[in-house]
Every structure is written in C-alpha cells, then in structure tokens.
Image 1 (cartoon, rainbow, N blue to C red):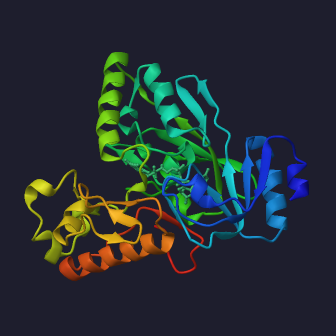
Image 2 (cartoon, rainbow, N blue to C red):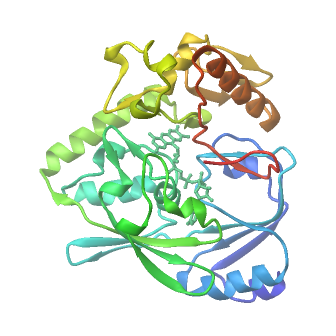
Image 3 (cartoon, helix red, strand yellow):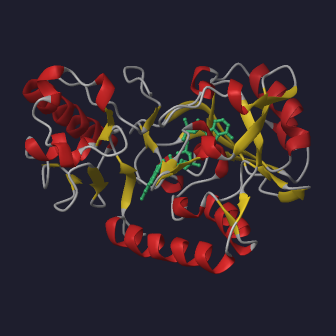
Length: 321
Ligand SMILES: Cc1cc2nc3c(=O)[nH]c(=O)nc-3n(C[C@H](O)[C@H](O)[C@H](O)COP(=O)(O)OP(=O)(O)OC[C@H]3O[C@@H](n4cnc5c(N)ncnc54)[C@H](O)[C@@H]3O)c2cc1C
C-alpha cells in the first residue's frame, strides 16, 4: 500500500473505513482498505499494484445503491473520484466520479434536454452507467454514446451498442473487474427555461418520496416487465397499474402487506411498498432478512421472483443483478 500512496497526491489510501459511512443506506462494516483514485492517468498503475497485493478488489461509486455486509469487506474497496466534465464539439465527456446531479445541472444550464427528468438520483455517473439508471421515462442508455473503461489490460471505448444496456442493467455487470472511467454524452438542444422547470418539479416530487436524509437505496426491487410475468401474476394485475410495459414491484408488494413491515431497525415505508429504509440502528442482516421475507411473500402469492435492484458487497451468499 505504501507504493500505491507513492503514486502521488491524487491517490488516497485509508485503512479500516466503515463502509456504512460512505453508503446512503448507512449499513456495513469496514473494508480493509479504501482507495480513492482521482486521476484517470494513474488508474492502470494503481490497479496493477492493488492486484499485486493479492487482496480481493471491488469498485464502489457514490454508495447509493449498496448493501454492505455487517462484517464489511476483506480486501480493497476502490473508487474512481475523477469528476471532470468537458465539452467536445456537440457532446460532453464526463468522468465517472462526477456526482450525477452535477452532470444533470451542467447540461440543464446549457438548455440541453434528455436527462433533466433524472434529476435527484443520488450517486455518481459511474454507478448510473453501470446500472443504467433511469427515472420518469429517461435512462442512461438514451444519451450515453460510449463508455471509456480500463479492462485490466488497457483503456478502450465501448460503444453504446456494445454496452449491453437494458432495464436497470448493463453488460458491465458481467465485467466486475473493469473500471468505468468516463462517458461520452449527447443530448438535444431544448428550451433552457422548460428544462430547468421540469427538473425543479421532479426534484420537489422526489424529495417528498425520498427525503434527502433518508438512509435507503431508493426502490429496493426492480419493476417487472409485463412480457415476462407468469400468467398467474398477470391475470391479477389491474390494467391501470401497467405503465410503459412494466408493473411496479410496489403493486405486488402492497398486495402482500409490505407497507410498514419491520425487522429490527429496518422498515418498509408506510407510504411506499417498495422502499426499505434504515431507521438509524439497522443492520445489513436485518435488511437482507426483510428483503428475503418480501421476496418469499410475493413468490408465494404470485409465483413471482422479485429481483433486488441494490448491489451487495461483502456477502458470499448473495448475488447482485
Ligand atoms: C433515495 C434514492 C433514490 C434513488 N432513485 C433512483 C432512480 O430513480 N432511478 C435509478 O435508476 N436509481 C435510483 N437510485 C439508486 C442509485 O441512486 C443509482 O443506482 C445510482 O446510479 C448508483 O450510483 P452510485 O454512484 O451511488 O453507485 P454505487 O451504489 O456506489 O455502486 C453501484 C454499482 O456500480 C458499480 N460501479 C460504480 N462506479 C463504478 C465505476 N466507475 N466502474 C465500475 N463499476 C462501478 C459498483 O461496483 C456497484 O456494483 C436511488 C437511490 C436512492 C438512495
């Protein structure tokens, strides 16, 4: 680790940082090391040194979509914190350590349209690309033209068609050892006033749904594609509940009485059947227990496997989708 720190001031190495302190859910024990890399130029050498240590290596972003195990992570948790935004002709090249809201504001201020409805999604650009984040009808795959990645051997551009984007997923989930460095973004010209107004309205709605201090990961389960629903489940969904080819997971959860359910310090919001939050003293074990219980209830009632949207860190027995 000393050699890593020797690479310069743009690398920060900390030992034993409790990951609950850098995740929105506020769950999870320490990582042996937390390494922040602030410059893309240092990434290849830094990763080579970390790999040479023989310790397991994982990537985190802004920590808004993670459940970290109570025991933490034995190994190195790495973050790429470079956050520069640069205009390149009619596109932007944005580094993945940029806070997502900064990316939205940057484009909204220029009157560009296409991502303003995604205002208020917490986290950084890298996590948003990785999970193909989206809201109110806009998703990353609509405007990300290409992604620059370090794949362990070198840096290369992956064009949108090769990113494997689909609802709340990307092909990068099959390459967990790749580090996303930047994305090329293309938006259309819009009316600056309209763009800002839409963003402001959506932010107000979101702040009511997800109070900014709430310890959570947003919606805990992915919505369901109508085309993939088993008949037993589909027959019971009222037509008005389907939107854009999907049924909200919240509808199924509501039918099994999830609202207000609780395990220790983890609770389902009384007003939102698909929102689990940490009341302050919750543990990752309790969060996982509640997630499993909700999945089992929906499976029993509808023959349906709900998929968690959240990504798990430090668990041997849980798979992230
Ligand atoms: C209140 C609230 C509301 C939310 N609302 C929405 C919403 O409306 N729509 C939505 O889509 N999501 C929503 N989310 C979930 C979350 O904000 C998004 O998934 C976000 O894009 C995650 O970004 P992050 O930087 O926090 O990633 P993290 O949670 O830190 O990481 C998520 C995954 O991305 C990977 N990753 C991160 N950065 C990189 C990188 N540079 N290279 C490689 N892999 C990387 C990590 O390994 C991890 O598996 C919400 C969350 C909260 C707390």
